[in-house]
Image (cartoon, rainbow, N blue to C red; front, side, top):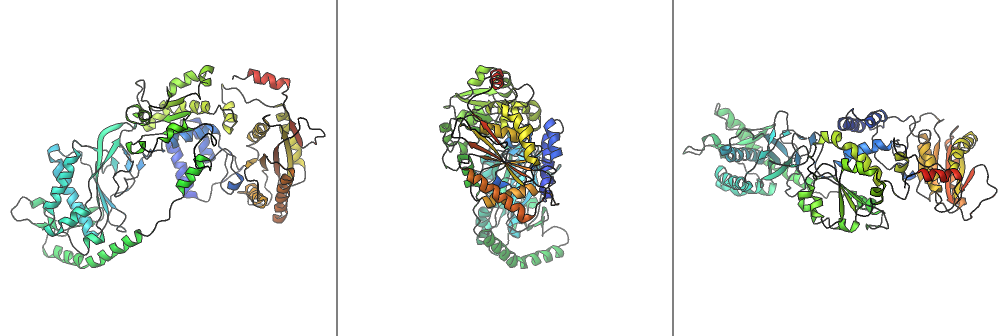
Length: 627
C-alpha cells in the first residue's frame, strides 16, 4: 500500500468519520500503532501496493504493524457475531440463520411504530423481573397485544423478550428452561384471545417464537436467550378484516370483554380504553373506516417488495479472490492456506469438508469453545499442532520450531479453549492476547516467496534486517536522483536480472524504501497502455489542485518480455503529459526484466544487472541471517 503524500480526506466525509470513530473506539489510545492510524486517517484495507487498474481509488500508506492491529479487529467480524456496541437484530422471518447476540450489546433498532408496513416495527420487554410462575402468562399476553396491534395496522413487527429499556435496547437475555412450553402456551393463547373467526388468520400471522442465543462478552455460551416473535399480516391472510381480542385485564370474568389494539408510535394502544365511552368509539369507527385504504397500502407494499432483487456479485467476487480466478482451490493458486474462524454453527459443518483437502498451514481460531463444540472438534481428522498465542511466542525463537511450521496444520487458539486458559471478553482480549497475534502473523510470513510483509518484519526491533543487495545503495543514491534531475516527464530505469537471482526482490525493496517520498505502485495490467497511462496520471494528480504536482510516481513493471512494450508504455504516458499540459511532473518506470544472458556488457547509467554471483559482503550478510 502506498501513500499519497499530502493526502486529504475523501469527499465521502460521513463514511470516513464513521470509520475513524470505529478505529478510535476499537483500538483505543493504548497502542502505538493506533496513534499513527489517527494521524493518517486510515480508511482503506487493501494489499500493500495497489494495482494500476485500481489507481482511481484512494491510495494511502499503511505501515504493516498498523495493518496487523486492524486485522485483529476485522478477525472478530468474520462470523455473524458483531463486536460493536450496536448489533443488528436477527433477520425478520428467519429461524436457521447463523446468528447470535452478545450480552450487553445494544440492538441497533429502536422501539418503533409502523413505517412502510414491510420494515418491521419493534417492541422490547425486559422479562427479567417476572417471577418464574408468571413468565408464560406475561409472555403470551404481551405477544397477543403486540400481534393484534400489528395486524390491525397491517405492519410487520417483532417483539423481543430479554432486551431492556435503560439503556435502550441493551441485550441481557432470559433463562429458558423449556422452549416447548413457550410454543404450546402461545398456541393456546391465540385460540383464547382471538375471536373464532380470526383464529386461523392469527395463527398464520403470528410466527413461531424464535430463541436467539446470547453469548457472553468472551464469546462463550451462556444459558440466556432473547425470545422473539415475528408478526407478518399479509394481505392474502388479513384482507380488510379487523381484529378484536379479549380484554386481558378482565379475561377471568364471565363476560368476555373485547378490546382493539393499534400501534401508536413505539407502543400499543387500545381504542376501547376505559375512559369516556363515546370518544373511543368515535376513534375506533374512524380507524375501521380507514381499513380498506390501509389494506390496499399493505398489498402495494408487498408487491413492491416482491419485485426481483438484483443478484449480488459478492459471492462470485469472493470465490474469484480466494481461488485466484481458477474457481478451484489447490496448490496451483496458493502455496499455503490460512483459515481465520470465530464461533461456528452446526449448520456450517456439513459445508466445510473441503477444509480438510486444503491442508491449511494455520488456523486462527477465536472460538473459546472450539475444542468442545466448534471447528477444531469437528475437524479432528486434520493432523494439527495446537498452540496458545502466548506459548507460541516463547517457541517462535526456536529455529527447529520454525522449520516444522509448514509440516502439519498449526491450530492457534486465540481466545483460550485449551490448557485451562480463560477466554477474554471482546475489549479485554486486545490487552490480554491481541499482542501475540502480531508474532503469529510474522511467523506465517516467513515464506520462500518474498512479500511486502518480509520488508516490514525485517524492520521490527529484535528481528534481522532485510539483506541489502550491493546494487541497492547504488540505485537509491545514484540512479534515482539522476533520473529525477532529467528534464523528461517519464523516465525509464531498467533492472535486468537472471531468473531466481532476486531482481524482483530488489525492485520491491526499492519501492518499499521510497514509499514515503514517492507514490509507488506495481503494474499488473500488461495491455491497453493508454488506459494504464491515464490511471498513472490520475495517481500523479490525485488531490492536487494545481498544475504542478511535486510528488513523483514510481511505477514498478515486472516480467515484461519485450522492451518495445516498455517503450510503448513510456510513450503513452508522455503523450498524456502533453495532452494535459502537465509541467514539472515526474513518472519513473522501474522496469524489472529477466535477462537471457549471464553477463551484460555496455550498460548505460539507467540500467543495472543482477547476476548469479553474490559479492563477499552479500555472502557475509546471508551467513549472519538465521535460517
